[in-house]
Image (cartoon, rainbow, N blue to C red; front, side):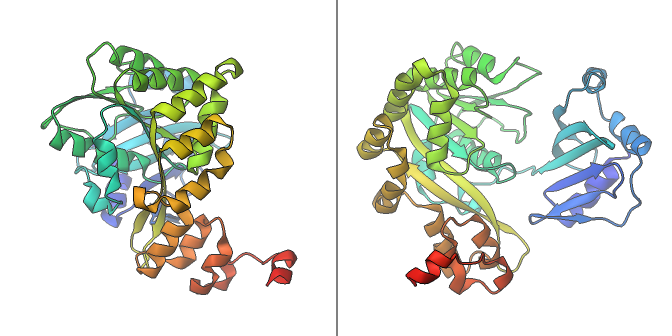
Length: 367
């Protein structure tokens, strides 16, 4: 057994989401969003490098020695499955191990709005799941893929970097391909997938113009494309796609989004009131004619008003979703206010006044 497994087993036993290893500090665990050191000595560069080299392949060692970061999945003997990033920094080598649960959670277990099932029933178009790093995008997408896998007879091709949740084929056939192992890049993987009779294509990250362009082509030609973006709202997600492609393709991109973008889900993870867990809170955009018109006319800044008035269609703003969850006592208001845009609305619910930003003089005058 690799010596690093001892830290990973401890992390699993404590219920952490991530294990952080870095030179000059003891190993740390991410517990419900907070980083906490374990009782262990500070890791030296030689010690940590020795631990990590035990689990790397020769190819990975060569890439690391050439100055590249590493992204891969690791399965310990008794320590579970992890998504791993290994990197070098000023003080030496470092690594983060993200725990991947063995069982794929259902959409019901994640307690997400029922409309996400409707998104899984689409036959073509693009559905985006967005949010910053560590907000559970991969978990939500895994639950969506599992729902499709159990309810429809389709060919699902998943492109990931690295593969996290492992999907056994159920009603559907699920083909999982890893960037760097099975395909050169996400763009190359999408191009190949379109020749493999897919019904659903999962793109782990729409990280560059070529990948976005290929994903758009797939969505336009009769496939359901699920993808992620590192953005923090529906409007920012739409603007990111438009800005990512060359200027001469701007009108074409807006036309695609107006016709083929089906939904944008943006999520954050907020602590529960007891502090022992976190709950996904979602902002949801469901495309309709009004939103399509705003996209084509360069008025995406007006989309939030459509989210506010589109509750009957399943839409919701992040602030309203946070407030609803606070009122239902599902999340901690002191943590929720960090993710709110209009923080004044949350002041009455907060118990720790230190987390409430100072009200500007102009706001005081208005009051």
